[in-house]
Image (cartoon, rainbow, N blue to C red):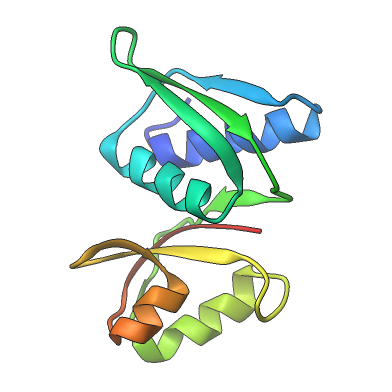
Length: 126
């Protein structure tokens, strides 16, 4: 386990998907990781997640996902650079989602382009 909870959680989801499992239990959670899961649920990458506050874990049911990874190092980008990073991390235009941490909270690359703000790249999935 590393110090990056988001990267560890996404790697556990990716490994469970490759192993053919439908559910995965992630034992380390943070508020940032919960926000990433919310965006993934909105985009149908995961079906549902259930937070267990007693043992500080989350149970995730995997949905329509091929790959999910954290961006390391976490590049900062302004609104004009978002397209460059989309070409780098996503397989094609219109396929996949990048999660960007902005001063207005976490949002997808489409929402950041509409708002006209940049931020720090957190993760991507498709």
